[in-house]
Image (tube, rainbow, N blue to C red; front, side, top):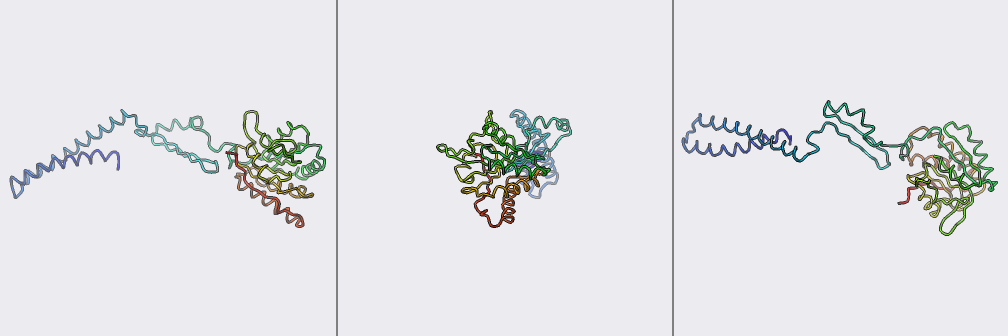
Length: 310
């Protein structure tokens, strides 16, 4: 019910109730009904209802001022929507001309929605890609150099080759890229899988921030196994599209698959893409590799979306 109408209805009900006595007296006095008496009763009812409504309205206004009701005088409202994928939107409604002077100050007052690290944010162009391995793994290093040379003409990508035995240099390369392609030998260190000596669970920065990657390709043996993905999730602050292999990576797979992965991602650079679109790009890359080299066993490669460890 309207806040303005309600006090008057309350007053009117009170007045009609009070007038019932007058009606009863009029009927009792003259069974035929005195017209003047009826008019008098009606007039008094209307006046009583109006006065009662004013009193009721003033009483509610006084109560609102005493209680400090934040909805008493709304001059500007902000509706924020945050979706499950992390993206968001904001709708500002101005209810009073005086509120328009506040609009230039809103960016400083309201937290930003859909920041650059949001899951459905726009991908940079060029998209930073890190091809990472140790120099001592000569066969893998040679393949990554070939991939680097083959994809150097992709305008949507900034491919950076990191072939170094220094664990710190490789960690820095991984942390600086939106697309990570880590290819190396894997060993178990207790319950921790190490890829080229790097602990997948220990890739956070000095401030505790996780990887900035949107896509991670793990080219080691059993990269898709739970031990690897579980460790990698501990280094994430946001979901990432993931590609890995079940079992050993057969010879010849990387040279065919990696260029298709980068070619698919090149087509998404500079546009809006969530984890589902990025995962679809990885699936498309497997399909293209299968078409190119149908005799190879591509069924061992799989994609998923990895979420940060809870």
